[in-house]
Amino acid sequence: MPHDVLILGASARAAAFSALRSGLRPYCADYFADRDLAAACPVHRVDPAHAARDFLAIAEALPPSPWFYTGGLENHPELVERIRRRHRLWGVGAGVLRAVRDPIRVARVLNEAGIPVPEARRDGRGLPRDGSWLVKPMASGGGRGIAPLTGSASPDSAADYVQRRIDGPSFSALFLGRGDRARLVGVTRQWTGIAGAPFAYRGSLGPWSIGPDLAGRLRTLGDRLSAAFGLVGWFGVDYILADGLPWPVEVNPRYPASLELHELASGCSLLEQHRRACEGGDGEDPLPQEPGVPRPPVLAKRILYATRRSIVPEIALDGPDHGHGFAVPAISDVPQPGSRLEPGEPAMTVWATAAEPAACRARSIRLERSWRNRLGWPTPMAHGAL
Image 1 (cartoon, rainbow, N blue to C red):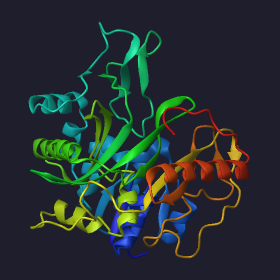
Image 2 (image 1 turned 90 degrees about the vertical axis):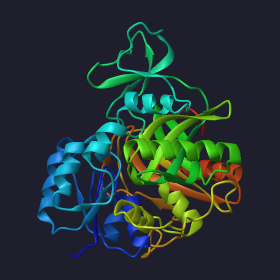
Image 3 (image 1 turned 180 degrees about the vertical axis):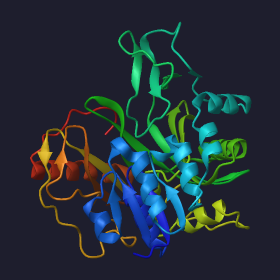
Image 4 (image 1 turned 30 degrees about the vertical axis):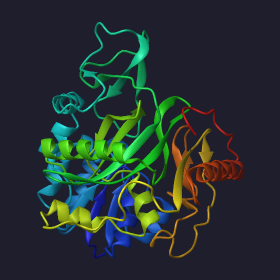
């Protein structure tokens, strides 16, 4: 089937709908091939155990086109480099990925610029084992594999690093980089934590209101990261807010999970700005609105994780145009009927809207509980902020 853009990653649904909103025809490959994605465009389901092999085979079988990646592929710079030999990349290549995904190097760059950042080390020798430090995988994704540094949790020197723990609410800032500077698109509040994975990404609420001082600090952070590492196009920075300061804990130089909230809230597609930034377009692109006090609505997306081994029943989509426009769906990332889910695996995403954050949060909790009752899943124990 003819396509305008190739999208590869652990989950391609959100990015594919961004492409559809911009008038493009996406071709996708990811780990799920969810029902709403398959109804909207061609998609291949990739075996996570052989992801690099399968992604490369799919890319090499298709005619050359622009392409970009979503979560997961930022940890595989060699794969990104091989695919970009055939397809024109809208994003950052292997060299930038290796640099900006090195948390020790990121911390050093920000320290030198006088920007607060949690201390990061290659190993935990000599550090207290009281949970004041975190063991984190170098190839991180979705908050999985993070644990407090204790007597029973020690870093693997090859695959892990340690980062000083900062206590506070979790946020994500979305930027559009231009190589020497970045534009702050907006901020979302993040929910984290499921049973057995206390830092796993669980959803987002936003756009989130921020004051001028915080906005200025985030702009400085985005500019420094973009200039130091040559970041182009969209990138996300997860940060903890403590004492009024944003403490960056991870840089995601690809399509971030929060991006679709900004698009749906504003009615403005961000893919064209991303493309122009990656291809060296001149001039400033219009953004949905200046960060600060966002206009209604506020959106929430909450990921439902399976709490027991399950077979997915038939779940109706919103309609034939599900996900194609700027209307907020009731649900997304809907698995195919008959799919098997293990405890802790993502089942689907539930959406809520309201005029202000507290009401939106409360509505999203009610909707999540309603869907859990319909699917026969008990409500999990809470981890972190709801």
